[in-house]
Length: 145
Image (tube, rainbow, N blue to C red; front, side, top):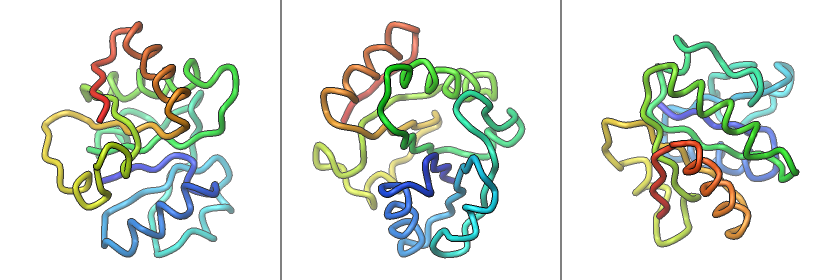
């Protein structure tokens, strides 16, 4: 199952459309419950944020996460709180770059088998690399594609 943060944003909404078209089992993470009603398809949703992530029992139900979030100075710190919550839930996060970059297609990403949690972060290449470097410095296993 896939968790998409930032699902109501410009990129997240389009990703939710693509996941619905692919028949993927996706859940949207939204900060405001009412915004979930406008998402494409009929996805499930969870109300949470990077600094107030879903409880561990909910996070255990996902094997893929897409982190979509606006760029600002405290981005990596906020995302790290969320990634730490994944680790507390028993996942071993592997950090990678966005589907569609480096030849990785959405279909390939959906079909990638792994016993570990795969966390995909989105952003401009230099911003993404900086955030991945920050996660590595804090001990996350990062595998950029």
